[in-house]
Length: 150
Image 1 (spheres, one colour):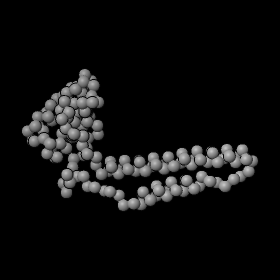
Image 2: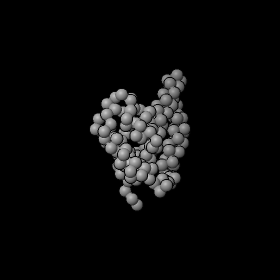
Image 3: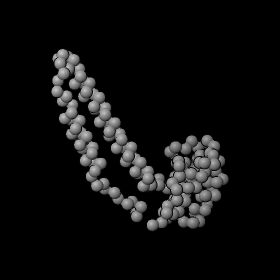
Image 4: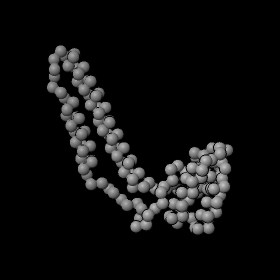
């Protein structure tokens, strides 16, 4: 399998570029990296790539850089980026579970104070079911699709 070039950190796109703002070498390098990815994907031919790289290196403002990548789609996330996003989503689900634990325990505690005695800890049932679903989702074989073959 062919090694893809490193994905640019934050290329100048038309929507986030302020046209008159001067760009740095880092901004120019990010656009050149995006153009290299477009060349390897076959979206640009060698001549057009060379023209755009020359224009990117000579660009002084964000508007000039944005025009060079406006017709190119955003690069697909790398497998590492996809894995990082999935892990962040997994941790977010457990943070929601922890928030549910706090809220349900607070309700249980308020009821115990109102009644003046320690009642059965009923939040264990919904929290256990919720945790079981989270664990089952983690253990389930994923729908891992290799999008790099397209």
